[in-house]
Image (cartoon, rainbow, N blue to C red):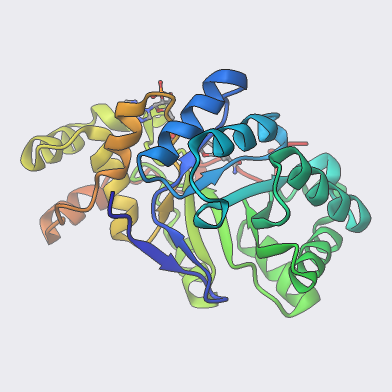
Length: 276
Ligand SMILES: NC(=O)c1ccc[n+]([C@@H]2O[C@H](COP(=O)([O-])OP(=O)(O)OC[C@H]3O[C@@H](n4cnc5c(N)ncnc54)[C@H](OP(=O)(O)O)[C@@H]3O)[C@@H](O)[C@H]2O)c1
């Protein structure tokens, strides 16, 4: 598998396609992580909230792929926000994953009612400065959440993992992030829950390029420089989801895909939705 990468604002490079692991647990999770890695995936996305860090670690070991070839990304749960709490939570994640440092560590949700995002962000920066975390980032942060981190610390996150697909293009947020050097990574990149995969434009492009509707959706993201973490427990689908780099959209295709955006109000609102 020839997997293109994208450079983050600190020079660290990540693959454009990684494996999402929620809601896999136990043996199915171990198997999925191991098959993905054996087939060439090099980024695995997990979170303390998914309760599968132990299984992800076992899947990595089972794959026999060298640890240093893999980008392991996990997330700070809302309930672990706070300075000391975040430092301890990161170390606990590393222990569960069976690794001595975290490649990417994200604040999972801003959880504004806690009022602890700045303290948590300072903890992530400390972990970077101490070398325990290579890349500090966030997830589900809106523009004003990102701005607050910068205003308080003078440092932008390297990456923001957000709900993003052709159905939820998040254009204004992505433009702001691009301006600040913050990489966009998409969760739920297939857009299946928004009914995207049955859309006539998606079906037409799938026929045009001999690809599946899922590949058409994922290709939209990588064409825009957005990395994706599709989850599949099926080996064949994992391979399919990474097989995106042998065709290119033309301007008519991109216009048809742009028209599928349902707008910001259709995305989960992290000022209201909080996950602990
Ligand atoms: N930061 C956050 O708050 C947040 C929130 C949600 C998710 N995430 C992360 O993002 C990852 C992906 O998000 P997601 O799981 O919501 O959405 P997704 O990856 O867009 O969709 C996953 C669903 O699509 C199916 N699927 C995957 N590839 C397929 C293919 N080629 N053909 C047909 N069906 C396919 C999977 O089923 P099978 O497994 O049966 O193939 C699964 O039901 C998660 O696993 C997690 O790591 C992060």
